[in-house]
Amino acid sequence: MFTLKKLHAAYENASRLPLTKDSKYIFFSDVHRGDNSLADEFAHNQNLYAYALSHYYEAGFTYIEVGDGDELWEHKKFNVIRYAHSDIFMLLRKFYDIDRFIMLYGNHNMAFKHQSQAQKHLFTFYDEYEEFFNELFPNIEVKESVVLACEESKLELFVTHGHQGDFLNDQLWPVMRTLSRYFWRFFHVVGFQNPASPAKNANKRHKLEDNYFKFIEQERKMLLVGHTHRPKFPKQGELPYFNTGCCIHPRNITGIEIENNHIALIEWRIQPNEEGTLQIIRRIVRGPRPLSDFVYMSNDAKPTRPARNDDI
Image 1 (cartoon, one colour):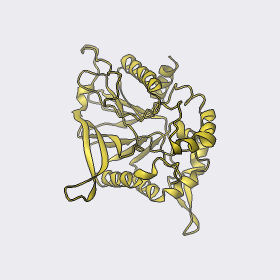
Image 2 (cartoon, one colour):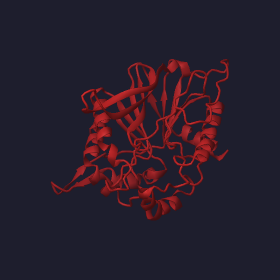
Image 3 (tube, helix red, strand yellow):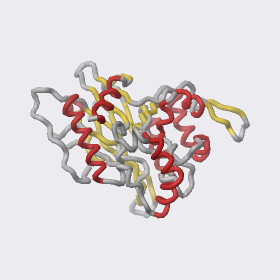
Image 4 (cartoon, helix red, strand yellow):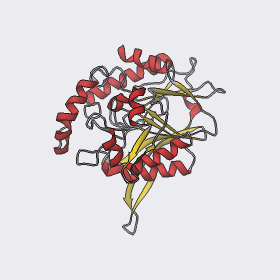
């Protein structure tokens, strides 16, 4: 019940963005940029991620990062993360400079919900080579949620990280941050996983998803989240629940694309061609489907909940 209240509040306070036939959006979540050490789960995918972002930049997409972009639980100082992945941040700045980058906060970068913290860490950075402060994301406002709205069809896609109401990762996030920073970050290097994370705990993930389904049924909105690290795209007749997945899988990154009024779940991965040369490829995992398929009308047949399994 508390999750539903938190999600409803996030929806009511969300910024509105246009959704038209010309709109192009790419959603990635749970990037978890770290310090490029062995504990940095993003490090092995940074080149893959950079290549994908470069593709979307050239193709005219707006990038919406759906929370947990930076791993501020394990790392106290953001400047360590920015320095470790400076090329990535310069690419993100290119998006931001032309109003095509929107950052949402999740439980792992909850600090950025406070504008004072965003101003301190994100507005500028110290350039170690030039030895002066340079602009990064000047005047950025890190949001909890956005709603993509189509005026013609009244279709709305509600986008938020999905941690809302997850007791350990929402209300108790300072405690979990401390445990992660001084305990779990060292243990997951050798294979131990944090049981409080829905990404590692199937029962916890299913409970969260049940709350997402209740929200969709009550509010009759499309919902796009991250948080669970589990990519999801609805099958025909299922509730319009989408999950970006994450960018820390061992072999790929997953995300959601919107283009030409169609939505698709995609992945980027490295694989060899017939000659054995490694190459980066983009693959459509599910879709694309017209957004109009997901206009949730009261006189439609009631959509069903997805099965409780690990299928996409």
